[in-house]
Structure formats: C-alpha cells, structure tokens
Image 1 (cartoon, rainbow, N blue to C red):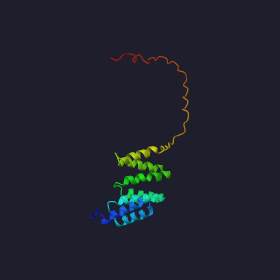
Image 2 (cartoon, rainbow, N blue to C red):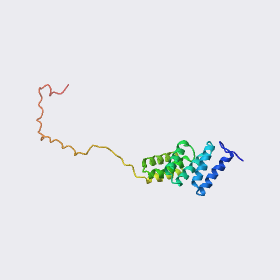
Image 3 (cartoon, rainbow, N blue to C red):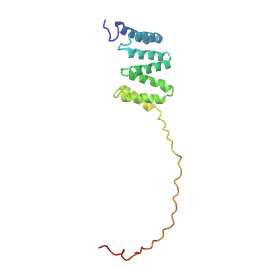
Length: 173
C-alpha cells in the first residue's frame, strides 16, 4: 500500500470514508471521521480537504457559526493551500447573512488580487459587484452663499501727472 507524504496508509482511506458518509447524508458521522483523520494525520497532504469537509458537514448540520469559524481557520492556518481560496469564498454567504458587508468586500478584494485568472477570481468579482456600494461619509462645512462683493465707489478720472521739476521731464542723455 502506498504511503502518502506525512501520513500513513490508512490516512487516505479514512478521508474517503468521511466523504462516503457525507454522500450518505451522515453529516455528524462524516464530521467525526474527518476530525479523527485530522488528529491522526495532521501533516497529510489532504488535511485542508478534510477541514473543508468538516466545515461543509457543520454547514449541513445547521451549525453555521462553527462552519464559518472552520472556514476562517483553514484560510488562516493554510493560506498557501489550494483550498484557502475556496475557504474564503465559502465564508461569504455566512458573512452576508450577518450583514458584514465590509468583511465580504475584503475577502473579494483579497481573492481578486491573489487568485488572478481563475474561476475563484470570477466568483469574487461576481460577489463584489452584488454588494451595495459603500456609503462615503464626507464631512464638509455647511454651504453658505458666496460673500457679496463690496461695492467700490465710482471711478473718478485721475488728472494727468504734472512734472514736479523741469529736470524730470527731460530725456536722459
């Protein structure tokens, strides 16, 4: 039997068993099986897939807060895994239900910069454009009418200047 890196021959079988239980809608059993797999094989390459299964089973059991925290934990503890973007996306419906639009916006923007040219980026863009636009609160001074210009006295003609001395009216040599 082939041994998975960081795991044991039975690791993949336990992981598969959790998937089978989920397919049979035995969500509590599947969650328990996957938790055992996680505890026994913490370095196994399927660990993030097991965490996604746990979160999905919690969701199916109606334990949405636990599911959300599991998705958050996965995305935080395994940020470079192939499941991290999926765990981020999975958080969005829960956060929307809690009216945490800023958190949803942050996740979408993160996915759009970190998951370029992927289906995840497309889904993040779709979610982002479905959000209400943020309300910009600009504090400005109250608008007052412009000040009335001061009335200038009527212009009076200026008398021509007369030279004070004949020397000043002479051109320079």
